[in-house]
Amino acid sequence: EQSVPMFDWERRELSLADQSTGLLLGLSLLHGCVTSKSNTNALQPRQVYSFIGSLLNLYPRMASRTVPSIIHVLRTCMDPSAGYDCIESTLLVSLEFLASESIISDPHGAHLVWKYVSSLTNDGVPTAVRSSVIRILAKMCGSNKKLFRRIRDVIGRSMVSRDPFIRIAATATLADLAKFDLLRDVEEIIGWVQSRLQDEEPAVAHFALVALKYLVVNEELEFDLVIRVLEKRLGVDLCDTPTIMKLDSLILEGLLMLLGTGRLEEIDGESESEEGTDNVPIVSPELSKAVSLLLDCHHYLQNVDKDIYSNAVIRRRIYASLTEYTPQILGLDPDIMRDWDGLNDSKDTLPEITRFLALKSISVHGLDFAAQLLKSHDVGTCSNTKDVAKDILHSVSKLFRTLLLFEDEVHGSFLFRGLSIRNPKVGP
Image 1: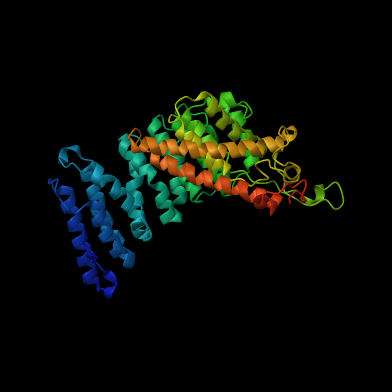
Image 2 (image 1 turned 180 degrees about the vertical axis):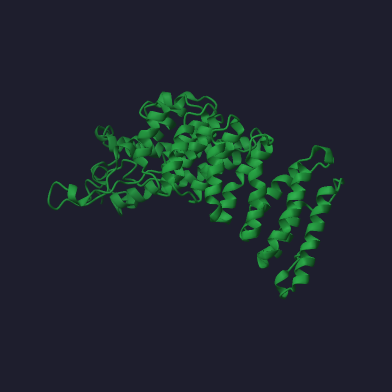
């Protein structure tokens, strides 16, 4: 690889003629990549777009002159009679570049792009092309927020399409918009999301749950309200773990991701019944139910699932959601922990002690499970187990740290000195 970049537009300010020359060079290279029938072409479309983008970042007004050539490239890729094998290598890269800030930041460039891109979201366009275009809409909105309303209308229309792949693409794009906090008029969009929770295609329901997750994270929706609505829409009781575990794996994964977004409920000062009561945030019933379901799902997998690899993604989501919570939300009580020396079995049945022991057991099991996944990756039985194992190790270490800091807060120096908390005078 070259250590010196083949372009450096910042060395000096370019005249209009030099800007046009640089753009012409880039578009010529792009045309060569598309029309070349040689499989040994060293210059790839992504490299060419990087070359063009570096010029447009400094001279954004050149974007409108670039768009027609890229549209021509897209039409060439979508024309079966052209005889060029460039669908995979060029089509998606070209769409991504059209949605980039290099093009969309220029008003005239954005107008030209939207005029063409919006035509590819209509009925009659091949599903592969239409769904690919819908998936870049979130990036377009991030590059130019003035396009939001137009993008919102396309997504709303696509979410009720008869084609399941179009509904999947539209709901996934809506989840991306929620993730990057680009949504406005959330009240209207909530109806779209709720209607997709019962979609016959599990992937659509999955992305609807992911969208709800990010709406809660960005404080557009309240966690407790979302949990109550979910129980009605999905027709399940979150206390019924066996029924929850029978949900489609994609729906279950999305639900577990959502369960890790709860927050403590602030107490209104006017509702304090006793004078002097501390205004301490409390754990709502819905949040407590979410944590219990995460623990019960893990316990269910340990006792029922014989193949440890079949639900690796589900386990990863359980660990990741648990790490989002503080000891108070996890159901740990420091006062009860201080009265428990770890040796008196009579107190092991207390809910707070049982919860603490369960969390420690889950953490240990997570380490063992990740080790088995890594071992299976070494022998080549699974292709993505290494990434899953790394995520689990990261989550389990965070959970261990939460528990250790909680014990340190409760027991202080006694935790590491090995002394009895109940009888500090024990010793020589």
